[in-house]
Amino acid sequence: MEAYILIVEDEEKLARFTELELKHEGYRVDKAMDGRTALEMATSNDYDLILLDIMLPELNGLEVLRRLHKEKDTPVILLTARDAVMDKVSGLDAGAIDYITKPFAIEELLARIRVTLKLRAAMAGSAAAVNSPSDSAGQREGVLVWQKLEMDINRHSVKYDGHEIELTNREFVMLRTLLENMDIVLSRDTLLERVCGYDYLGETNVIDVYVRYLRSKIDEVYNIKMIQTVRGVGYVIKSE
Image (tube, rainbow, N blue to C red; front, side):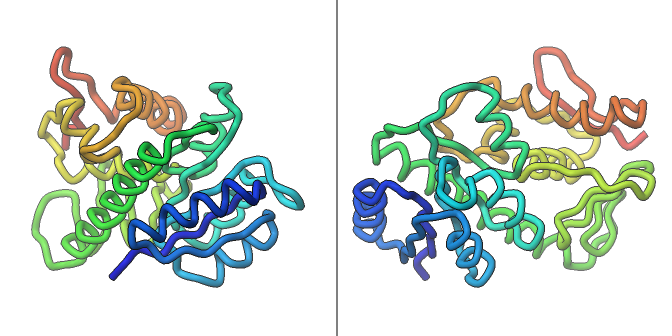
């Protein structure tokens, strides 16, 4: 079954061009030209992916993203003419799974779409596996546990000692991968493939960046040492 994608872009020519290219690749496509319409469509339909411009009339893309992810976990790739680091970080922190700066080559956009859809499929398959009966340590019926930290796969939530921790999609996938492989040292390449996909085109130090994000939201807040660095190899979460 072909993937269902929503394009949110107020530049009519760009929106139309992107729509034609995606349809040519076999995707089902809807379009929205402003933020409010986009939010209504995104919450009413089950899209596999949303391409979301930041600069939109009526409701900007970041606000659309924040409101959407209170109800759904649809993957979002931001389309933006802004190239400042803080704009990219704000988008990722708001829940975007990736971003691409305009103007972009359509081949790069298509590659990022393929990576995101593969990641979504992998997460769905992994969730099914987690829901099956298991006797592995630190896991029970869709919940991964480490000390006072609990990750609920189905609800896409993480709590420490009952306190909710807000994570972006990639931070969630990173933490989940480490918890599912507790006591196993995972290399940066392995984590990069799992978190960003085999065809990832971005910066190679992204794994170190996401580890810093997780540590700032968990380790530093609760004064613990959860994610450990193994020099020259990668990262691990130890059961004890």
